[in-house]
Length: 179
Image 1: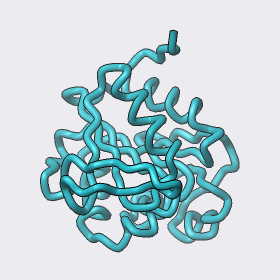
Image 2: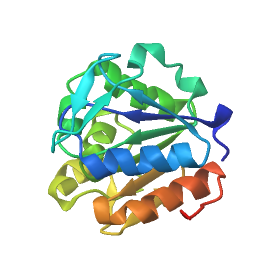
Image 3: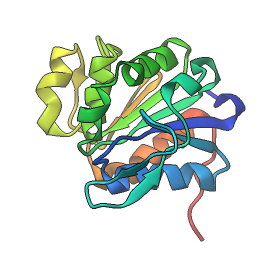
Image 4: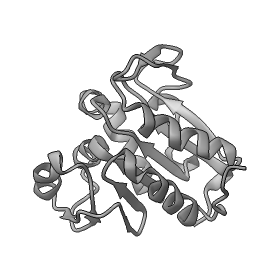
């Protein structure tokens, strides 16, 4: 699958997990993928679990799901806040229905559950939300990365290299190492 227009969206809310947001975002930018930060409020500063700030670029209303080839959902406490915004949940559902790739890590699976895109699919997450994942119909696996068609999932920050490698493989971008 090639990412249309090299366009990716990474979702943001307060208390995001620092590494699960920044590692994929910077790797996307490094490989030339335009990575847009989308949150409930555009131009607002959102702080990570450890206080690191990020300013959002856009809101879900600003996004045309058909233009998105890749949507990334980081973990931390952010997904617990994201699911409270129907437009965030609907964006995930719409990108999935439009054929975009959805990649989530750790607690990011909570938003995928709320978007109702996991029934009958293989995925992983932090073991802390395994029950929620299975109740959503997921065939849950305790593996560093699970790829099932247009879904990529990982468990925790230690899995980020495998997570990003799978994203690059699925989007058709060659994985490059830092020099």
